[in-house]
Length: 457
Image (cartoon, rainbow, N blue to C red; front, side, top):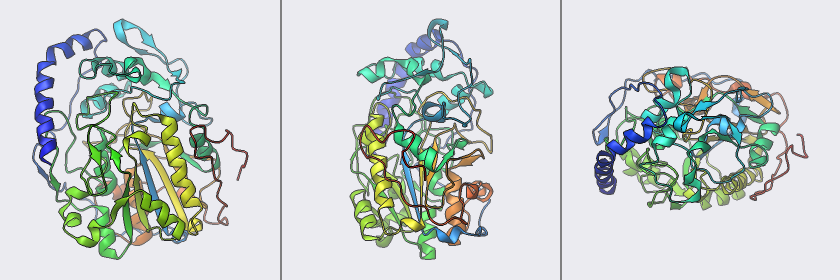
């Protein structure tokens, strides 16, 4: 982890040298309001927050029909950015526009580009974007980030693209999944920050207080409990599938429109894979060997050997993290879903697809405040399962702790924190009285399948 500390030292120097320029750039856009936050951790080993969990939640009727939970985690898109015009969803309000560069107002617009810039997406940017519930700081933050994120490529040249949205013309398969299965239009990132804190919440219902920021070193290890440890102790099979390649995000959450120069692998600690930084995983050979390449997912699915709980993590090129091409990401996700659908275990599987943070893109809904750290901004959420309701939009408040809650209920695992103890378990999205629905395979290509889907059920 020494390379992360050194990179942060370099980043701090760069930020301090650019401070005056940043202030000048932001002054041209306008102020989005004061920013306040709890003090983030500055230690290398992050300890457990106060836990409100510990009890084993009751299992809802019918949930025993699901034996395999698959969590596909993509990158950096807000709900309005992908589903803001989806019929029946809580989407982009009519007539909205936000103040931008030199006072110019920008309204949400259909963005046909498959590569985007996005905006800064750390803790301070989330507070500024939300702006006390006015939800009007997105352009302010995006234009202000130009100093730290020079337009090195075409995708990085338009700070206004945080107001752009996509629909079935760019991401038809995602809209098809919403049409065929379940769309969650109040899925929130668990913490108002970037990828590493978000992925920690996915696994542990907390980040130990770590929020990120250029002046805060990335923790080297974590001592609080996380879900894979509890699954292992209960005899539940799990795997964390990581696609090898370039990492999809940088340690500096203020950098926009550029990718990391670091590579990722299953047993390398990254923003998307914090498990190697948990000693209880790293020091246990059986646990350690559950961190595997994504190629193993396809083999496990084909052989009918999918674990009971799994996470599927992309590399940069298919992550949809700006400036990665969203069509490539959609094709990759469709391939993962198709592999699960073609598995002999499909009739007992539930797939959850979400994006780990909002990526600086506009969203109009003020996040609920559940504690000092969140919730963060809305992200798209999809549920694909033979027991998922058809064409259902789940409007209830959901976060990554909802994933934990459902797994805990199914396998009799104790809650980790107050977050997952109190989370909504998404059970309304399922109909366990229906026979398992046959799989609908979509085209795992950049063009995807037509929308609406030819097969309605």
